[in-house]
Length: 334
Image (cartoon, rainbow, N blue to C red; front, side):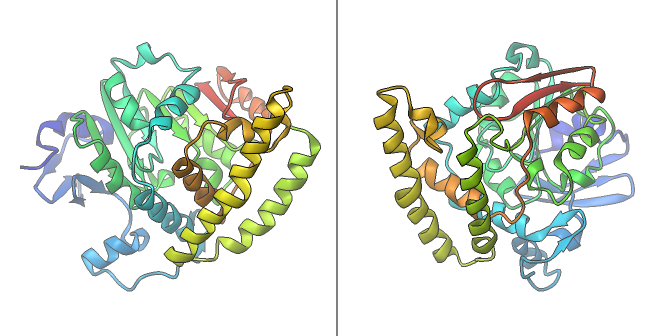
C-alpha cells in the first residue's frame, strides 16, 4: 500500500485540489499524473529529471551536467545529488547546527504547523524538525531527496517531493512556515528576489544565505576572491574519485591547519581573526570534508551583506536577522 494512502487530505490541501488519487507508484492531481519513487512524489518535468531518474524511466541519455537554463542549473542538481549521497549520514554536530540556525525561531509555535524544508538535501535539518511540527513537507530537486527519505524513514508525518523550488505546483499558503537554508544562493537567479517569490507560499520564511564577509576583516574578502577563482575551475570536475581526493586535500591542507591556528590564537582571544575558525572549531573531519565538497564543486555561489538583506523589510511586515553564526540567517513574516 502506498505511503500516501493516509495522507490524501494533506495532499489535497497542499495542491489546493480535491480530485487527487493515489496509487502504489503514482499520484494523480487533477489532469496531471506524477510518479512515486521510493515514497518520493516526483514533480519535476522529465527534462529536469536527474540522471538516475532518466535511467530508471528510460527518458533519454544522461546530461553532461554543464547545461544551464535561465532558471535551472543542471550541474547544481548533479552536484547536490552526488554530495548528499556521499555524505548521507546525520551527524552529531548537525543537531548543534540545527540549534544555531533555529535560534530565532519559535520552535514551540511550530507544534501545530505544517512546515516545509525547501531544498532539504539529505534531511539533516528535517531530522530534528519532524518531531517539532504537525507535518513536514520536504522538497529537493536532486537525488538527495531519496537520501532524506531513508534518513527519516521512522517519521510518519513527512511528505516528500522531488521538485524545482521555482516550479512548485502548490497552492498559495500551502505551508505555515518555510525553512530554506543554504539553497537560494545556489540558484541562477538573484537570491533576494527568490526570497520575495517564496512569500506567497507561507506566512513565515526562515532563510540562510551566504554572507559577503561584510562583518569580517578586509583580508577575508581578498581570500574569498582567490577561493572563488579556484572554485570556478574545480566545479567543472565531475569525477567522483577526483572530487573525493580534492575534498580530503582541502580538509587536511586548508581547513584543519586554519582551525589549529585559530585554536592557538584563541588563547589570546584572536581566534576570530583566522578564516574558517569560528564555524569549524568543533567540527568533525567528516563534517568539514562535506563542506569542502559543498564549497568547491558548486558553480553558482551568491553572497549578500546584512544591509542588502535588511532591504527586504520593504516587502515584509517583520524581519529578524540573527547576530550569531551562521551568517546570515533570518526570519521574514509577510
